[in-house]
Every structure is written in structure tokens, then in C-alpha cells.
Length: 138
Image (cartoon, rainbow, N blue to C red; front, side, top):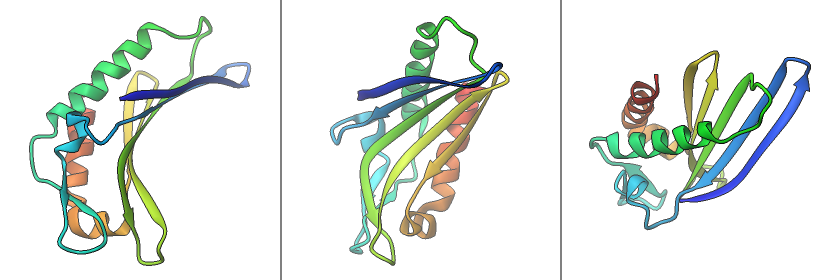
């Protein structure tokens, strides 16, 4: 996993936000095992499995980031985790499977970017990934 960036932006007197970007590489087992090559040309689907390895990896990275940071108080912290998995959609856009996590008011939220193919073929698994991540963090 490669850390791509770490930025802090002030949007007002009491609104200071930090965003941290990471990218998994194709050999990273924390994310690699969840993707399964589809028989179709659209890309990979999500494997039904225990997503705890991915969730624990994200939790460890987040905890480490929270130990280092700006001196000023943050109103929000965001993490963006890009994967190597890129699928096509119906209009030939390329969509990268990415996990987004936000810490605000001592509570974590999670969103996952996915292609229409992943949505149609693996949405229940994506929800399971999201729920697993949130259970580990909250």
C-alpha cells in the first residue's frame, strides 16, 4: 500500500479537514482476495468472503494516521483508498473501485465507489464490505 498524500484545509474558523489518500497495489492481499475475474468483459466481481482482512488493514492505517497529524483541531478526517481494480461501464467510462471513510463527531462513515457492473453483480457483497469496515471502526 502506498500513501499518496496527506493534506489539511481550513474552510472556516472552526472547520479544519484532513484528507489522506492511499493506493493498494495489485499484489496487496488485503484487497486482492476480494476480486474475482468475471466471465464477462466488464471486469471483476466481488468475492463472497470474510472482508475482515481488508477492514482490519484499513483500521490499522487509520489508527496510525490519527497518531500523527496537525496540531490544530480537526472537524473531519477523510481517507480515500484506491484499488487497482478498474471496471468499464455501459458508456465506456472506467470506474475505479475505491473505499472512502470519514471521521466526523467521533463517528465513522463509509462509502464505496463502484462501476455499474459491480453494482449489478455484487452489490450485496459491497454492502457487506461497507458494514464490515464500519463495525471495525465504530
